[in-house]
Amino acid sequence: MICDMKKVGKSALLLSAVIVFALPLSSCSEKVSEPPVPVVEEKASSAASGAVDFVHELDSYEPKKDTYNFYFTYKIVHPWWDAVALGMEEAQRQYLEKGITITYEYMAPKAASAEDQKARLEAVKNAGYDIIGVDVADEEIISPVINEMIDEGCKVLTFSSSDAAAGCKRIAYVGNTHNYEDGVALTEALCEKLEYKGKVAILVGSVGAPCHEDRARGAKDTLAKYPDMETVAVEYDMDSIENAYDLTLEILDKTPDLAGIVCCNMSNPVGAARAITERGSDTVIVGMDHDEEALRYLNDGVIYCLGVQDCFSIGFDTLQVAVKIADGNLPGDLYPEKTNEITTIIYKEDAAQMLELLYGEIL
Image (cartoon, rainbow, N blue to C red; front, side, top):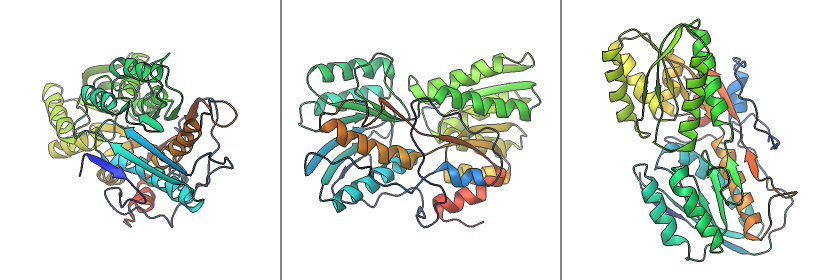
């Protein structure tokens, strides 16, 4: 997969397999000012159909220009951000139907790096983009960079799964505003499955990435509530399946009676499941998102549950908000300062429908 791409007109970017647009069953969800509560209790097959919303239409706002040029940078080249790009592409297509051309660059490194992201932002801040969008790689490193850019007259929004630090001058954020709550929800599901006793490891993801750190913090706080639950390891896999696999094997070597693993990004449930399967362990895995292999492990019962974020909606809404900011509009009636997107917890009984919905795979 390439590490940089420029979007001019429609792209052919897909998930790891073809997404079937004819199958969406959900309707457009209203964005609210408070973070939605993750769907923990929902274990019926309807959970899958409501997890991702492909049915979107541009709102009634009339853009002030005929052409826009945006720049977006995110944490790492990965199928999760490919799904966000699909939502952007759909919004781009709808704008084009209205006679408005939006081009954008969508850039990320092959390995997560806040320093790489900082360098990218420094390189483009004076390039004349209407909007610069940032999926924050490390809030401590990137937030000051964003502040400097705003002070120099750039229009910057944050998007995807990681906002900047509190107090950052970024104009708005579109994405998951409840990562801590997602970590709590997943860990509560795990604790209930384990009858509130056992040793648990946490695979975090990238050091400093707000979404990964917040989910891990939610997991730690939840485990700490129960006296018979013990956190035996907290490891950073840097959003790498291979690293997560190796780390899980190392944890199993040290803790053969490991009861559970909380996985805080899209890569580590796959790596953990590969390791658990190889060892023949009955360790219970909970994790994030919609990786095709992870969904197969969910269907097979190797993974207990997954928290699926609506990446398509994140991308679609990001492009709409970017147009409004580019036109000089501040958060308020036209768009909120934070546009919240949902996370839905899905289980084994939801896996087949989710695989069909996202990948056209019929089990």
